[in-house]
Image (cartoon, rainbow, N blue to C red; front, side):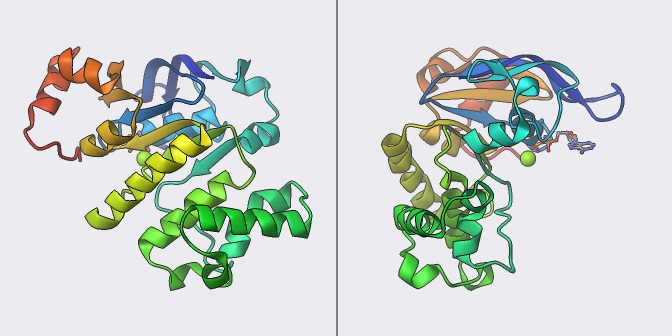
Length: 247
Ligand SMILES: Nc1ncnc2c1ncn2[C@@H]1O[C@H](COP(=O)(O)OP(=O)(O)O)[C@@H](O)[C@H]1O
Ligand SMILES: [Mg+2]
């Protein structure tokens, strides 16, 4: 469904790699977690998938077609994106934030409103109490839920989530992780979920891709990785008694 073949990205004319020769694929309905420390190219990888960044080398296919052959607008219509650091528009109400994409797509006011209500309810924020508020009138966790609702608005087949719960306190994060697990089973989207949190990766991922210093160390299920760590790095990572966080 999403397939990267020998994808590299350099920002400085080839002196250093943000992403180096990365090949992986995400199956239909699967949640793949990209796990790695800060600066290892996770955000760059997501942005290449929806064509916000052009790969220096390699091919990315979405639904069997090279992203460079997709019309970018059509491509992004199929892909919901939850940005790192929430990124709601502060001067727009929650309702306006959620319906941005449907509005761009020219949906009627009525269908936009119905969809907005459905989505806010889905993420546990009843529209009658939240639709008219502004982002700064919501807690961090609530804003993050709005970010998820916004990404789902046009019912995309794919969802890219960039450290969606990274900035939240532990309790809120756990609540949202549980909610995502429920949503994931309900919605059956193909999801790429980025995190630097080991515990979160094990909880959310059907498979996990472990990135380290530009290399894909291993990709597999939780069981594959715990039973048969492919490299010393992976082995050390999971040898920590209480799974922690890469920084
Ligand atoms: N627009 C850019 N210009 C120059 N360097 C960049 C740009 N975006 C990312 N980088 C560099 O690429 C590397 C990977 O960044 P990023 O994909 O944001 O990592 P992550 O999301 O894993 O923290 C970092 O070294 C970062 O500084
Ligand atoms: Mg990032």
